[in-house]
Image 1: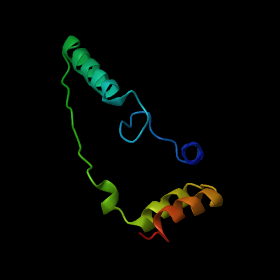
Image 2: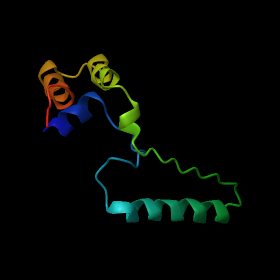
Image 3: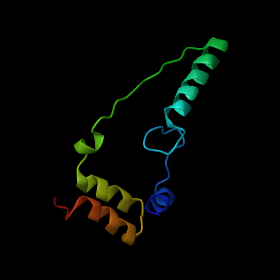
Length: 91
C-alpha cells in the first residue's frame, strides 16, 4: 500500500532499473542485448555505463530522505509512516 501511494506522488522513471519489481536481471540483460544489437545493426556508436550504488542509502542523510517526499506533496499519514521507519527504532 505504501509503495502504491508513493508511486502516485513520486512516479518512477520507466528507465530506472534498480529497486523496481521486474523479471530479475534477465529483463535487464535482454534490454542490454537489444541495445547492443540495434547499435550494431544501425552502425551507431553506443556507450554503456554501469554505476554501482552500493550502500547508497548509507550516504544520504535521513533528513533528506524525509524531506524529498514532503516536497512532492506526499500525504502526511504516509510521511508519518516513512519517518517512523527512520526514527524511534532501537535494537
